[in-house]
Image (tube, rainbow, N blue to C red; front, top):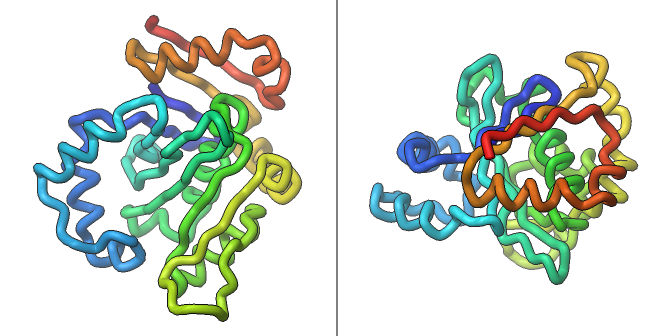
Length: 219
């Protein structure tokens, strides 16, 4: 399955993607801001994929201009608390600092808040990743960790749907002006696709979506 919005295509990862992800995840420029920094073997990566390949986790390859530029995820979805964890890393050097990560996150959060049973997303940001801290705070993420206390390398933030809509209104309008306010959800024949079809059949969900939506399905 894939989700396309603001000129960004988010493609649900497949087993054929995991070696690409592993190679970039082991890159020092990327893993210096990660919580787990040890070398990831092919066997470890295969086990990771088996553990996350379910409807509690949505890991997407970010594609821009038909080029794979990074990874974005919503994981550990808890339907009782309506919470999930989010993350992103960009390996394409020309995309870092461009509009691509911004619109990838906006596309992902639109998908999360309008299609998944999630009202709050949580992230962890390395204390020294000042660019990421400023960027996430601009999106409406609220810090849960006091930056001046303790020696924790990672700061915890959370974002509610309400704060997301309030803080990103201008950015979402900009995205609509640049490439249109249309989103495409392509649903494949897998567990994630079946789950999304069930979600789409909920009347209240369909009424909430504030953008033009095209649903394509192979199911």
